[in-house]
Image (tube, rainbow, N blue to C red):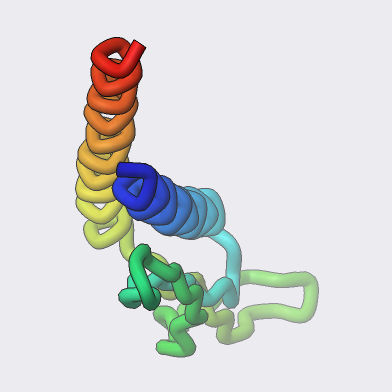
Length: 117
């Protein structure tokens, strides 16, 4: 029963990293030259999930901007809000599912202790 709680807590930690990555990407959507990050989840032995953060090096759109030296080409952020917002909604649901697992495991453990005493 404790292993179920550890698995769910591992999932919560991994999903938290995904949410932090999405939030950081959204915060930097207008930062010139910013490269977005992606979190991939990998199975961890004997149980659990490991979050691996990778920076995506795809170039952002290049536009002309007026600077003190005249017009220059500037690379914008490669973050797409149309990707980030759905990912944040999915991460929220994944977080809720793992949290519910912890709650159910806690209730089961409480019931077991009540029966034993």
